[in-house]
Every structure is written in structure tokens, then in C-alpha cells.
Image (cartoon, rainbow, N blue to C red; front, top):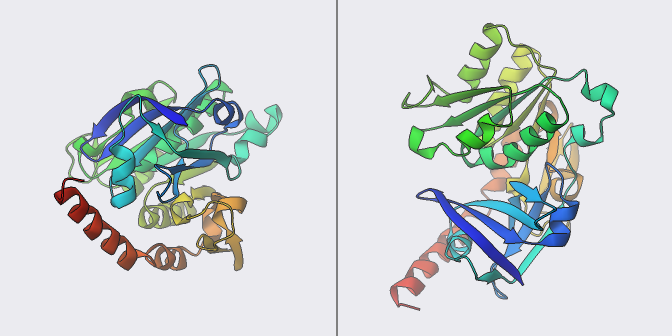
Length: 286
């Protein structure tokens, strides 16, 4: 059993939990994900690892309340335990396997949208710990939806905040912030973009315009996390790839985002039905 040690609501719909999982924590690396099953009848939910501590034997997950299964996960309290937590799954971020000489020539810009800020954190933390210059852009619709601001500030060289409505930081989207940062004289050898699919598409296009290579994370496409179900299929460079076993990170220039977004919406009818049943279940007091 995987006991929940701490729980914190970062926003009304985004929850951070620390979970006891010693073997997973000892093996985890930036960019990887895990699968959570709340109970024996629960759906397999892929969540990118938001932090890990091998010494304490814990992993941190951040869950956004979207549907029935994510609501079930968030309903758990410290002291309770998930039925299963499987991982680490997927390939780690490319920089993990770079030599010290390669790393010394890098300068990263990490661009996070919404709840995608959580998986960006361990990447910034790793890069900073290895002496690689790293700047971070966090974007959200409003200041109330910003997460990991102080945590991120502690592990990056420069933190840039932007909100769609201007309630915090720069008024505009992450693409506007990136253009401003580069116009102000910052230069980068690599961008990593994690957030909603549409955000990753247009941020990748901006990176291409600015001449910055871009990596994106496609963890949101997954279902079983092992490559068996095929739900994570995505076209990268004209070839079919499986996000859960060959990713979740890919060259953003090569990803067919339009296809990925169509695939992402393939279970909307089932999700709506599950949400309706979930609400009815709660209404009966069960």
C-alpha cells in the first residue's frame, strides 16, 4: 500500500500529495511519470513525477480535479493509501544522460503552463544542481491559478511570471513572455515545454521562430502507461511513436499536435458519462 504522507490544495482544483514509495523514489529521474490507481476498481491515472526524495522514500504528485478518477485521488487524506503506484515509467529527460562537457554548453528555458508547472520543477531542480543555467516561465490564466512559484524561484536563475489577465507578472501568454525574454537579451540552447497541448503547440511554433530547439511532454495522452493499449500513439517526424514507452518527451518541432489533440479528445463521451455517474454516487451519500 502507498500511504499518503502530506496533502495540500495548491488551488481549489489542484492538489499536491507526498506519497511513500521508496523503490520508486530511489529510481525516479526528471521527465518520468507514474501510474496511480486509487483503489482496486480504480482507473489507471498517469501523473508526471513532480518531485522525489530517495532519502525519505517519497514521491510527490500533483493532481488537477478534472473528472471522476482525479476527484477520487484528491479525496484521499494523509494516513490513507492508494491501492497502486507504479513507476518510474517512460524515459527521463534527455539532459539526464548528457556528459558534464555537454551540460556545460547548455542554457535552458523551461516553459510551464498551468498544472504543467509541477513536472517542470524537478527538471529545473536537477539542472540547477548540476550547474546548468536555467530560466523558467510560468504561465496561468490568473494569479490564483499559479503554482510552485516560490519553489521554482529557489531552483532557477531567472523566473518569469505571466498571466492572461495581468493579475500577476507580465500580462499575456507564455509565447508573449518568451518573445519578450529573448528580446531583452536572453539566449538559450534548449527549451522544454510542458502544459496543455494547445499551449505546447503554439509555444513550439514561437520557439521555432526564435531558433530555439524545443522538447515537449506528451504525458497527457497516456492510459495504461505500458504501450499495450495504443492510446498514446502520436506522429513524430511522420512516424508513429508511443508516448508512454518512447517518451513522454519528444522534439516539439516533429510532433503532429493537431493529431495529438484529436486523440486527446477521443474519450470525452466516456469521461462525461463517468462524471455524471460519479456525481450521482456522491449525491446518494455513498
